[in-house]
Amino acid sequence: MSTTKETLAMPGVRRLLLARLVSNLGNGMAPIALAFAVLESKDGSASKLGILLSVQAVAMVLFLPLGGIWADRHRRPTIIATTDFILGLDLLVTAYLFWSEQTGMPLLIALSIFAGFLNAFWSPAFPGLVPLVVEEEHLQQMNGFVSIASNIGYISGAAVAGLLVSAFGGAAGIAGDALSFLLAASLVWKLRHRHKVAEPSGESMFHELKSGWKVFLSFRWVVVAVAGF
Image (tube, rainbow, N blue to C red; front, side, top):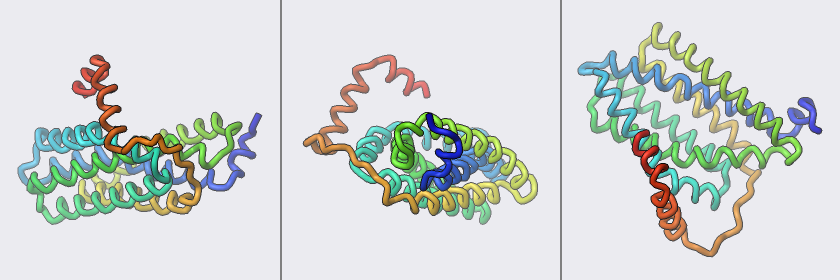
């Protein structure tokens, strides 16, 4: 049975935990920062905020099957680091638009859709990252550590966002969110040499995607649940 000391001493463990803490710090900041930024902007409204959140969620759901296939075929650390980095840039642009009061909906919607697209690739890749860092006997304990780091990061992110937006406005909160993802990307990038790619199935990516959608559509209750989301 693995001990806490043994698990934390393994190469890459502390870096991964810090990356998860920092990344989820940004996730905790995101809804508060965006809400304040939208409502502070000219013509800002709850409906405008709802549209931005909705298009991001829809984009993520639509591209999630593709993200899952991509995660099985490519290096997960590289996927996570790349999506975190690009998402950080996406958020920096968003922060600048709010700061400069260039808050036209078409561009904000495009940035939100792109963020959802990136999350669709990040989400399937992350669960498979932990087994690349620790041995099987340490997995259960490491998953617990990741969960703790995630929760601490999310709760702390909400508090940090509250301080930032109250002192400097919503755009500053989004900029802080962006920096958290850029830092997380740099941490995970150092783990890129650790990878395990699934054995090729012999099927093309398009065929796998088509098969996955058929399975998804065959479960009506799942379709209804996703549509409701």
